[in-house]
Amino acid sequence: MNPSAQLSFFFTVSLIFISALASPSASAPGTELYQSVCKDAGENANRCLKFLGGYPKITGAKDYLSLCKSLLEVAIKRATEGQNYFVAAAKKKPSSAALKQCSTFFYDGLVRSFESASGELVESPDTANYDCKVAGDGPVNCNSALMDEKINDPALSNLNDQMSFLSYVAFLATNHLPQDP
Image (cartoon, rainbow, N blue to C red):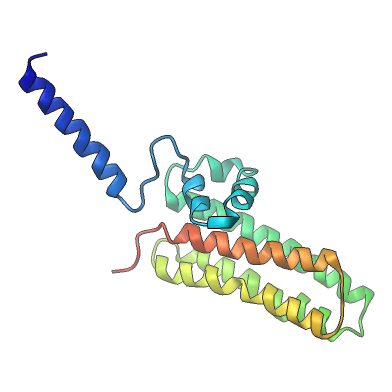
């Protein structure tokens, strides 16, 4: 190759590389999309990688919209399972106002927020992003209600922590969608 062709080739490759780095929604070469989302989690990146790594539809997503759809499917399923767990706990202790609140109001809000986010991914990514963020309010408020009632159940606390984290990860993922104009 003559020097002019080498320079042109090098310049073209450099431009492609720079544009890939400058693109806010592009992941680094060789990095899966879910890894880019988890990188945004800072000190919780390893927790995020471990969680999302268990879902092939998420790890194999080819674009952020597909990743978000798959992640919200998981979130809805896990939130519904969590709500069912609280319903069972409330049946065992019917005198507990906190367990009743968690199993109904707080976890209803969690499930509805994830469902709403899923329905808004295409038409209003900003709304989906907001819904993912506020989904975490339910588990946080549930934990507060449990603490106020002095219910110290590690399984319930762990469930609330997982749901709060799932809300956070969904929020980070939807940050990668093109935002409303």
